[in-house]
Image (tube, rainbow, N blue to C red; front, side, top):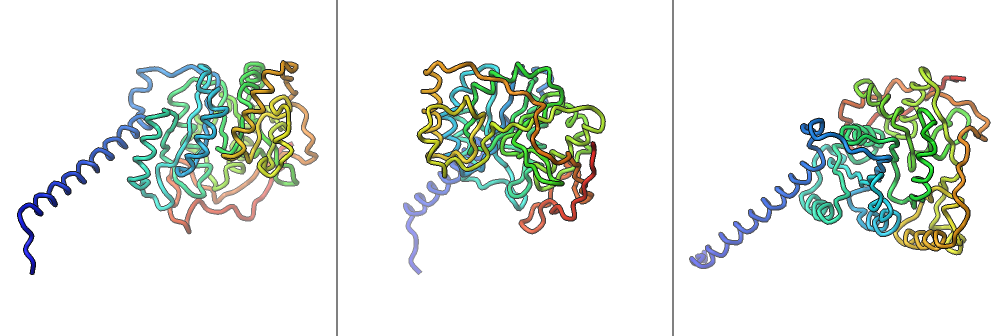
Length: 342
């Protein structure tokens, strides 16, 4: 057997030490990110930040290109507005209940250090959509005094200035439940890709966070929560037809529009290629001195079906972590029953 000389052993030792120091650096950086994202012990001592709206942008860890698309478009408006906070929400735990890979942690840390707009949430990837929202609502409520909470996907172009124009003018609307409405018999509910809720409705949820139940599907789960509130107090059910829920990237006619935000509030399906194009249209629209934004009424609902409550006895308590294998995520909703509340 060939013997390894002394210099080779020294090189191997030095290389091993270098690898270990690199690991420690990455691990310490991730712990720093986790501290920023999760530390709550001193929140009450420091006090909460007062804002008009918190916008939670749900994003998958590998979708940095989508996050950059938002940062370079409507996200610039949010960064420059002291009444709004926009954060990308990323799952810290994978489908199998393990923390995300070390290399991914390091990339997220570097991205967060550069932009300061990422929160790694104690939520699970996969079909745990409502649990992710539940954890986010707790995190936000512990840190901010807000009037509205917005949950949005990272493939939405949000007409941010129009939203900020409207929110103060809707403060008289109690228990606001605002979004794009799915309308079919036995299933009237808001789509979760853009969902706006007022502080009083969120406060009601958080006051019952230990008894709230989570289903796999966010729209159905939030609908269950909202209907529980409806049993005690009236809500403002705002089915907003200005939320364009089709795939904008398939509609070439959008690329030739002279305005978007005077007709729409947001455009779903706006991906990396379309995001800067939509923002360019908005900037030209802003310079064209169009009429002020109109504030549509909330009491017009063209859906002919009754608002029904989903009953799902298989849903789990949200405070309990979900099952974390590909085969056993939150129990699928089957045999749904509906109760007419009107």
